[in-house]
Length: 370
Image 1 (tube, rainbow, N blue to C red):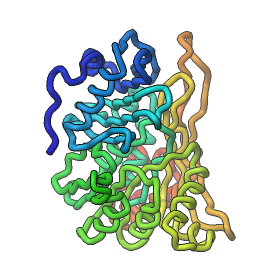
Image 2 (tube, rainbow, N blue to C red):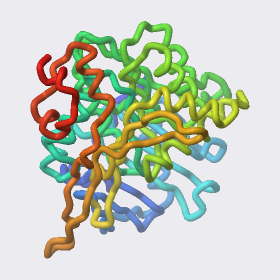
Image 3 (cartoon, rainbow, N blue to C red):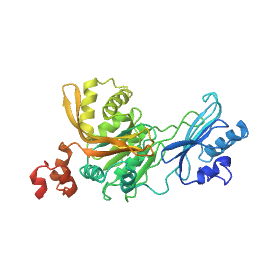
Image 4 (cartoon, helix red, strand yellow):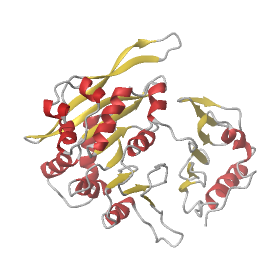
């Protein structure tokens, strides 16, 4: 049973936890403690007196959530009661001493307006993505580590109508959906006796028996990708997930690789057909060299052309320069190509927002008058 952390459990790190501007804390041995503030990493003057002190802090944290870490199990992922995500490692896995990474939980959920203000995306691009969610498009958020994939997934999930039943599946529950009918599932690591593990794939398979309208998987990084694609292809339109990849095309390749991990020895062409029929829109988010997080591409999956999945770029980030402080300036702008997904809004009897009509004037006239 998870227990609250004692007030002194975080020792030298407590001040960093209390500092609202700090979003991530990274401990690398006794003398190296870094924080992330505003997308930029800084080294702090926080240190530990001994390895025993750092180990005691790590063990205290993981024990509050019913996990263990020692020489036999030197890796640990955990979620604190406040929602913060923790990763810890011990020697011999971490050669230079124990490590601890704490990604602080945002108490105030970021909204689309916040990301627009930060320059992550534009109001018109969020309007388009909201229309995609209402049209029950299957969405894939692609990006590297620390780019803000979960934050973006949270915002997109918030556009799901409140009348629908949503099942969320995560390694560490971070999504903060406010709809009435949300079922939250969380994976479980292997227990002390070597048993009891519940993988993301187990939860995806189980979710299909729960009568979900939509399935939201925090991150696909294993064979559950096959089950997710099959769910998207069998009546669970409007589902979403994230993926580690640096470009939309890399995201497609990574999905292929993850599906192969399921061990079914499917032909590559068959896998690509599954992907092409399941995924509708890929949103690429990147962390630029100045530390800012930007949506750099929004692409639509059109289908197959021989053995290749065809993509259509709908929005593209264009760099316009840098300001006096070195911050990258740019704009996420539409390419002018007409998204096929918006035809679904008309077919579903939903009204197409005026700003979407202005972005894509070639949307068929019937949709305008509906």
